[in-house]
Image (cartoon, rainbow, N blue to C red):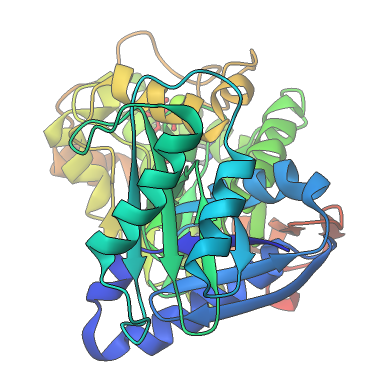
Length: 400
Ligand code: ATP
Ligand code: MG
């Protein structure tokens, strides 16, 4: 019988909240494997054990678990009764045919009631493997590791671990609202919060019908990809072209980008009130573009009263790009698209907008009227994973 043995790292450190974290993780593992032939998801002394009926589903199981926050690593394992000889025999039978330069056995007695001491287990199984294959043992830097874990009722062995995403289970970190452009950075920023256990909703500002609806399609696809890591997401699509036109007629060119960003944050904050988000998230990184100098980040950020999280703030573009590739959003982010701001953006935005100048320029705008109108025209959608396609609810956000 096959099982997937999941190890969680950081979770174990969470003191009195441990049980709560664990039940969140168990729940999310169960939900993420919906639709597959999974018989049981159980939490067992420091691990989660998933019983699967059909090994042919392992590639799909692996793909889904690899996205799920809160998992350190996991492995497809064989379940055995607690009989050392039978375990050694099964291991020898299952070893790969290929030559192996060195190996070791690593045993764990999660339940110490199993009477044989760990080093003795390792020696006995190791001797059987060596007798069968003649592979040399290397305890410190083995090329091949045979892991055997003794839990309360059963033992499990496996040869290969898959890295998990790390982080903390879905929903254990509160709720955030991420400003999602179609670019490379903001999906990575959102993912960093999702990985820390924050349920993250998304808001995307678009200039349709002035521009094509490509940016909305990209935002939907990015949300679909990120939903693999949190299983359910909300996306708000907010028409922004009208606001940009008003800014263009009444704000000096150099200040426009900063004012667009301030308007976006104000609208996001109003939406956050309807979603219960406790913080906003953007993909800003210091110095990446003119609007992201410390001065401009400060002037933009000052309109938010919720905490404004910028998880990429100190990262280089190469590092962010690597993350984007790892989480699979990169390919979508680089699809060409007219950014809602490029059309309305001057060639030389101010790199040091002063708060006074920006506030003076905004006096020409009906800021709260524009925010209210934007919130009223926002369209909310829900994406769920796995299975069902994005459910579209073309209604006001409150109904979601
Ligand atoms: P990104 O790659 O995320 O677009 P960027 O380096 O291009 O980032 P900017 O375009 O200055 O930077 O945007 C800074 C942040 O503002 C973005 O990371 C995102 O969080 C938010 N933002 C920008 N444009 C939009 C938009 N159209 N809709 C939602 N959020 C946006
Ligand atoms: Mg951008």
